[in-house]
Length: 465
Ligand code: BES
Ligand code: ZN
Ligand code: ZN
Image (cartoon, rainbow, N blue to C red; front, side):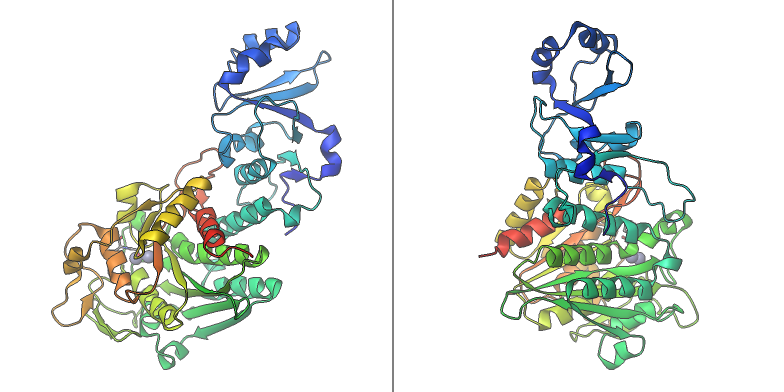
């Protein structure tokens, strides 16, 4: 990836306008050390160092001298993420005289996240405030890899389905495999039936764009094996149990789990984690046509359990169950999955907090702690087995839904759990992958959520020796 337009090279740092970072507690002493003219300017703007506020301070000739920025939490990468869109276009750099030390990596990440716009279809994107990087070797900075991975999620989710169908998602995986020395194999169309992935085929068969299971492998055979699975429903109409117009409006994002899986893979490969990795993305369009799968149908899944289709809109768990069964056949050290699986997860936790489900206490604790450290939090939800009764079928081992509207994200996770052996460490994240509104560092549209947490988890669980 070349340098995103919101950054300037270190060589431009000399001409950069300094960013003086402080917090409320440091403000009074810092103010007192300024010239009377600067003090008067600060007071005239009622600047008081409260977190989130900033002020451009001019020199005597009226040109910008520096920008004073007040933050609440120096460990939050988004603390300065509002600046790139609010400051005038120009080059900025962290002032070494800042009363509060800000980690250059966090600043880089936050600046990049805040500057992001999905401009693929825009004629002339607006010029941006640019941050002068400290290192010319930006490609090897860990924060840059995190930024790049988050941007990948956003771009993939924001791209409309016509340009991000199953085949285009596969092309992204091919590009990643080529860039980092991975192998790619895809099982496409009727071959899914021949190779026993009946649920992926059933959900995807009604689209003119062939369903597929994308499989990316990378790493040294001697390292512990991690399988990363992501829901790749490139558009979810709901199938025959068709969604309402507002329910369908943003369903280009229903491959958000797959986008997280591919972005996590990119991070693992770019940072050369000592693991062997398999990424599985069942990529389909849940479309409607004469051959669409129907409510009431029974599908015998890869793993052998039969599933009665209660609702064709509960398609995520269907494409995932065959992918998870296949993942478990490999007996890896760990399976992680990401999916925009239920609306219920959003009702329970809101749009910003991904729901974590995990069959292993230590793994869950590590995942949550990784999220805390990365300021990329998840919330654990229970795999409360009694609620499996909501997925009873009269004629099959399991149903993919039921009449109850209760505990929707838990029943979805319980459904997935049936396809993972008890002894297999597994974590499932039900993620929204979207910002409904514009906030600092969180532009409206596709969003990576729990991605930094997942990468941090892998780093902690599989440390380099
Ligand atoms: N893709 C949706 C879930 C979704 C909806 C995620 C809105 C984020 C925002 C999923 O395929 C779905 O439709 N789930 C149903 C399941 C139900 C029919 C059992 C749901 O959550 O309502
Ligand atoms: Zn659905
Ligand atoms: Zn869906």
